[in-house]
Amino acid sequence: MRMHIRKINFSFGVKFRTDSDSLGKVEIPAEAYYGAFTARAIKQYHVTGQRSHPYLIMAFVMIKRSAAVANMKVKALDTKRGNAIIKACDKILSGKHLDQFLVEAINSGAGTAFNMNTNEVIANVALEIIGNKKGNYEVIHPNDHVNMSQSSNDTFPTAMHVAILFDVNQVIPAIDELVKTLIKKAKEFSSYQKIGRTHLMDALPVTLGSEFAAYATALARARDAIFESKKELERVALGGTAVGSGANTPKGYRTLAIAELGKISKLALKPEPDMQFGLESRFAVARVSSSLRNLALELGRISNDIRLMASGPVAGLSEIGIPAVHAGSSIMPGKVNPSLAECMNMICFDIIGKDSTVALAAQAGQFELNVMLPVMVKSVLDSMDMLRNFVPIFSRNLVDGLSANKTKLSQYIENSPVIVTLLTPKIGYQVSADLFKESLKTGKTIRQLVISKGLLTEKEVKALLG
Image 1 (cartoon, rainbow, N blue to C red):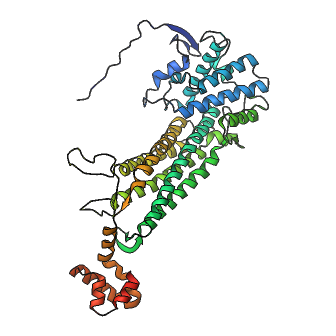
Image 2: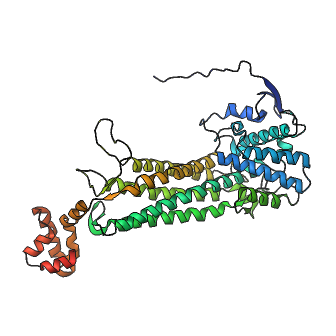
Image 3: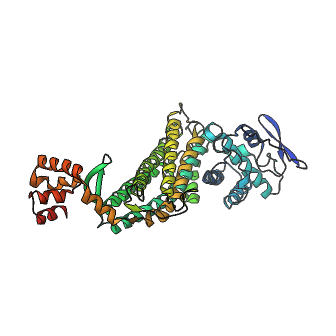
């Protein structure tokens, strides 16, 4: 039976003010810093229950601040309003009024609802700063002043790039830490020979260290691809306004606004040379998303190997030991599971799915604008949040604590008939194949069979097999 939870309105005693927009009047809680557009939007976009990402809020507020600075410099915005908007933005960037950004992460096409939520909060904070009441938009208007020289169509793509850059700069150090840990384990395990496996079947020996070194190489390559992809994000289309033509922007505004945004964000931002491309294509976001997917493919593969190597301890491979981070079972005492590797697998599945969302959204653009922006930025930021949160835990609490079962590793090599391959240059392919089958049938090792049959001396076998 499904439980239905009824929402109860505890609004007794709450005071309201009346805000107006192009659709008419709306009652807003008197203490709210948002306005009519936001009030309408939060009734419509009840989707995930998740508010927009803090980095997206930060990016948008930085854009509004940068726009106000640029508009003042080109004499489009008077200093009283402009300075009030700047102070309001600074207040929000310091952590105040973040609870007023109520529009959900997935909202209207092109993120118009979130842009207006931002405009309204900044306008009302600015009004209070200069001693006016909230909603007195004749003095500072969300559209006319906070959104001056802008459109949702150029601010949201720019904010996407900035927010993703903020997050990717947290992800890369987390990957670097894991790569270093894998290199450390590769050195620690460098002398431990083990049976290789191809097709999940016995293959020629390798070392446990070389396996971990290969894992480090894979993640380093994936990390480099993410780093390369972020360069594309540094080109922003701010100033393109509605269709990339720059309509309604004063001369010089675009260059000044992007320079100011780069300064406050501490990012190496530059104008996108083709503003129309910058609005209609989400190539840069799709590229970084695909690089995250490729990292997830490698992380998932490595996690699978760790789970297999740690399987047992009696009926599995049991080549490595894993640190116990918590009890593995609520019913089987003493059981230890590869729980962190399993968690990493699930994270990787989710990232791969989110990349599919980004890919579909990226190709869904039409003519001068891709409107599928909110779901794209949510998907990428969610993926990066999982990585930057969990990769360090995976590195420190699982990988760094792995141990080698030297006895098992040696036994697998000695008992596997496949090592006859190393003797083939001396005794020939057909003889080797016959020995392989005889070893499986009798349980005798290749070493025992070769020496007992007089095919090679004990010294010769030792030189070839170790």
